Length: 331
Image 1 (cartoon, rainbow, N blue to C red):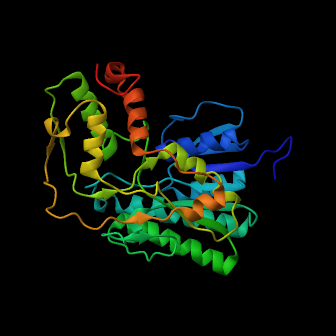
Image 2 (cartoon, rainbow, N blue to C red):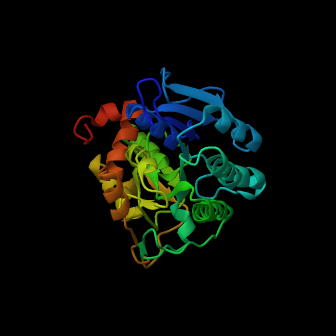
């Protein structure tokens, strides 16, 4: 409980990632004391503050994580760390790390809650990938889960552990299934940063042609900071509440890229070379139901992927942004 001398303590696992850094910043704004954990020697994004502590710790070292929970005694733990890569990433060569970071470290947290801190809570970030491929047409908290890769296997295993601890030990833990969410802090190997990088290059050089794997798919893209602002509120929810978190609007990637490039006076077909052609027929459009998370947290998911792309362009490609600001049209 927060007092004048003892603010609530949050432990953010994966604080140097896109999600963890935004989450820590939102928690600090809410008055939490935050301990952020990352593999790197220093905090990457979160600025120094009296209520922020950074700990260099590899989550595959489970005994060290268990020791940290006993030392810091957090009131809420946010597990937003993962061994995860963009499309085409091969998990087999890192299978031990994948299981230790994505599943076993979550089990260590559950044991901390069971043995030491039954008042505390865990929020575990899972993924839309756990719902299978292809996705069901309507995706909600009650949708069945299907593991079809090593990553989704580890995420589903952690969810099953959480549900077991809730049923057996009344542990306060929630799962959040996040759909794609982007920001200027997203790694350059991911789809949206690569598209914006090509857009920026085309703004500066009308002859530029970039390469992308495919555009023939549906995706739901949101804003990472907005998503993590919502996640920051979930620890306050009753135990046993799991949530789907998305923008609520799936877009066909080809349509998205066409609209994005047109916004800046360009034709995407002049600047993108596809490795895989679009399928002759589009598969049915699916949608994610976000009514539960919005009602529970009082947060509205409002920012579009076009808003996010503009922010990435402005922050990560200032020379290109200078050519199109402030109206989003080429000079």
